[in-house]
Length: 436
Image (cartoon, rainbow, N blue to C red; front, top):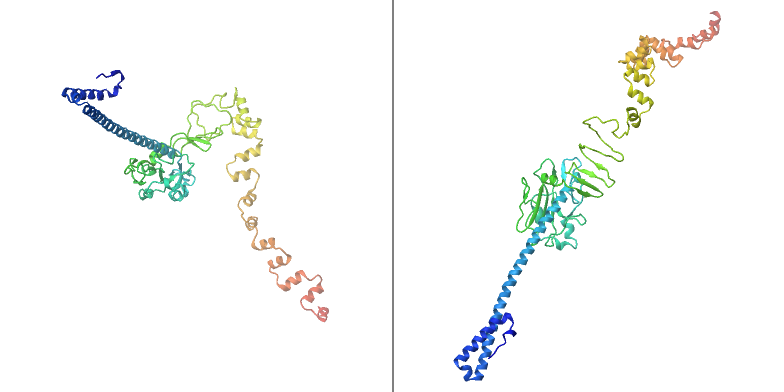
C-alpha cells in the first residue's frame, strides 16, 4: 500500500506514522490478508483512536495556555490600575497642596474646602462636595461601599468627594469616587494632618478611614486593598512649591509666600527680591528698595548723564532744586522765602521765646499763655472782685447792685431826675415838701 507523503500536512505526520505502524502489525499477523472485511473495520478503529487522543491533547494544551494567558492579562490589568491610582493620588495631592491658602489671620493652613469650612478658611477654593449631596444624586452608584467609614477616624474638618469642575480626578481606575478628607490646622504644627485622599481599590469597598496615617512621618496606612495618600501640614506646605494656575493668575511657592504673575503681566513678589540685573518696561512699584552699591547717575530710570538732569528727571523745580542744593539750614529757609523774623520764629526752641520774639511784654505774655478763662485774664489785668463784677455786669441795674445799692437808694440813683422827684421818693407830701 503506497502513501503520498507530499500530500500530508506537517502537523499530522505523527498521526499518519501511528496509522502506518498499526496497518503493518495487522499485515504481519495475517489478519488483514486472511479476512479483507475484518481488516477494513479494524483499520477504521485504529484510525479514529489516535485522532481522538490528539484532539484531547490539543484541548488540554489550549486550556492550559488560555488559563495562563488570562492570569497574565488579569495581573497586567491589576498592575496598571494600581499604578494609575498611585499616579492620580500623587497628582491630586500636589494640586490640593498648591491651591491651599492661609486663614484670614495667616495662622491656619486651609486646603481647598467644601460648604462647611470654618469662617477663617472662607477664602479657600471650593473643591469638595459632601457625601450627602452625591448620595442624593444620579452619581450615588459611584460612591464606594461603606463610604461613611471615612469620617469614623481622624476627625477631619470636612470629608466628601472632589467637586465637578474642580480640575481634579474624581473617579479611580475601578470606577469609584476618590474620598477627600481635609483639616484646618496651624501652619506652625508641621505634624498635624492636612490632606488625605483614599481609593476603595478593586473591591469597591472603603475599609480605611481619614485617620489611617502616622502623623509624625506623614505615612498613610490604608486597610485592605484601599489606596491612600496623606499629607501633614509640613508636607502640604512643601508640596505647594510648584507653578499653579489659579483663575487668570499663575502662582509659585509655598503657601503664604507665593510669587504671583497676573494675567496683565504684573509680578507680585513677597518678601525680598534679590536681583543682579533688572530691566523694567513701564512702571515699577517697589515697596522698598535696598541698594548694596550706589546707582550711577545715568541709571535708576532717569536716563540722565549729569546730576542736574537727573534731578530734573526726578521732578525737581527751581525752588526744590535750590533747597536740595542748600548747604545749610539757614540757606534752605531763605530759599523758601523766610524773612529775618520768620526765620527766627522757625528756629526758636520754645514757645516763650517765640512770643518774646513777636514783642510780647510780661503782662501780654501772661494773657497769651497763662489765662485759660476770661476771669483768669481779668485777674492778670489786676481786677478785684468789685471791679470784676462791675466789668462783667450786663446792665446798669446789675452794676448798681454790684455796688450794693438797696432798693430805695437805687431809686434815688436811677429814677429821680429833680429834687422834687427825690423828695417824693422818700415820701414827702405836698405840705411837707413845701415846708422842706
